[in-house]
Image (cartoon, rainbow, N blue to C red; front, side, top):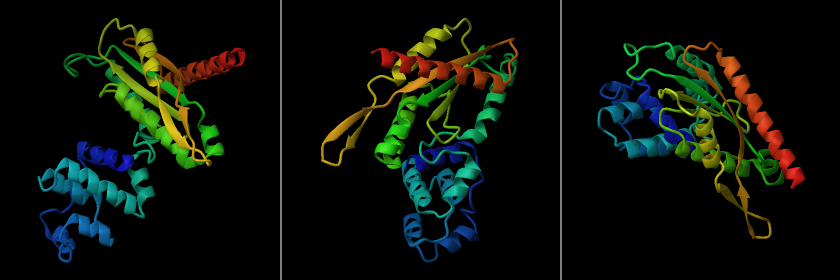
Amino acid sequence: MVFGVFLCYHLHMTGEQPGDINGVGIEQKHNKFRSFSDLIDSGGELYATDLTGALKHGELTQERFNELLSRLILNSQELASFRRLHGIDVTTGLFDRIHLIPKLEGLIKELSFDKEKRHNPLHYVMVIALDMNGLKFLNDRYNHAIGDRALVALADRLRKVMNRKDILFRPAGGDEFTILMPIDTDNADLANRFAEIKSQVNDSLFIEIEEKDGTKTKFPITASMGYSVLKRGEIKTAEELLTEADERERADKEATKAKAKIG
């Protein structure tokens, strides 16, 4: 469901061409059906672009569009092609690795823009690498559905913590996440900002798991994190920024393990 809702927003905002909503194509599809809902339930031929077109022409509300597209994707045998085409992680609804390098390179390029090209010129690009703790344990002890619930919980927390202009990824399909942060404030205290984000991400996040005996366990969701920064005027590649953030994330994970052993 998360994927469906996110994809509908992605399709709409990226301006994908609408279906033949006013032409013969869509009319033929509706000859035997009273609504989009009937068409989906019957397994009839319907595409995301048909719904996008209906939304743009005011024939569907955003809420109804979200619902119908979610159902369409969940019922579709072409889910894999949707994922490949749009570069969206099915589990979390975040961007996958297809978008990561191009979007980071785009932000690096924007660091050189002046006010003529960008109203508020960028001063920094911050990259945050996250690794969810305990995913393998959840998958091994329970099942992958429980692990997926933990991933979704963390993705939802990231959406709440981060700003709308920040870009979230689950690039490798595992327990790793990446955040790209364009920052247009000069002399920003980025170390402090990172510390705030890390605290908010790891603050009292749990999923509830029902054990075989019927008892319920609260499993804490936490993430090891690291970051890198490119300042206006500096030169680093996208790969260098990602590697630096990953190395700091791994150091944070090792420090957490060491602290747990001492405790």
